[in-house]
Amino acid sequence: MANLVKKINFNCPECDQNHEVEVYEQKTQSLIEGTIVEHKETYYYCPIEDEEFIPAKVMNQNLLEARDAYRINIGRLTSTEIRNIRKMYGLSQKEFANLLGWGDVTVQRYESKTIQDETYDQKMKLVFENPQIALTELEKHAQKFDTERYLEIYQKITQLIKKKSLKYHKEQIIYASYVDFNKPSDSNGQTRLNLDKVNNVIHYLAHCSSRLYKVKLMKLLWYSDSLFYKRFDKSITGLVYKHLPLGAVPIAHEDILDISSDYINIHEEFYEDYIAYRIESKNPIDLSSLSRQEIDVLNEVIQKFDKLGSKKISEYMHEEEAYLKTHDNQIIPFSLAGKIREF
Image (cartoon, rainbow, N blue to C red; front, side):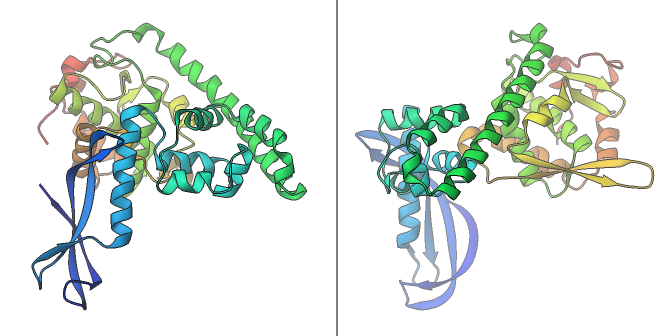
């Protein structure tokens, strides 16, 4: 079933006029490398001629969607993930290829059309996971960069090494805080803690909410996990929440926000008698990191609470059975969280 996404003015090839056309998205299937994959397809509709058409640029994007679906199917990096790794190091497509000792246009092809083989894929994954490997590659291929650019890239990589080290330390602190919740249980919504998923959910909430603050984010996380548990008998993130005066808050929430710095910016706003922490999305979202069911639940939560401030959401949460039947600093079990009121 196709969904109307938007209407735009376009020089329509069907009637040779510039007019408003409708843009639709639908699920379709394509054959890639001998494998049938399901992916999103975009097409345009001309109401004057009652005809569908796909512009060349959109067709290329549809092909990229199909190839990325295949990449996900075989466990390789998508074109967006490759681009994000490159941008993490502040490199152009040619520079990223040179850093890794590849041909000048190799990365450009991987980001636009060609599916990388496993060897190249593994190398990019290693560089993403460990900036120290990127530094080794830079030193190995130093002759491909002029001195000034080499020093700029060297400085960027060393900064990432320090940042990764601090992030790793924070992650270990978080996992230590969750050591008593290592197995699926009523406390974690039958889901082990998944920090990548936590980051993805925070990123999505920050990107799609109109105005988000730290206190409100904590409530949106709880409602997202609780609604997902209510629907599917498991939470999204594996976070464990405590009953606190302003509502449900995940264990180690400050450290969790610290490790989300790749995805969000936190701005301090000073008022007469308090400080508020406004949260903004930093980068485009990679939707492949979230399932369709997870996205649907997150959208429902955002739609329900987007116009409410932190105080109003806290007041609303205080009327939930999960809050009424627990006490300060007590863990809120998902057997109660799953009983949230209907939206």
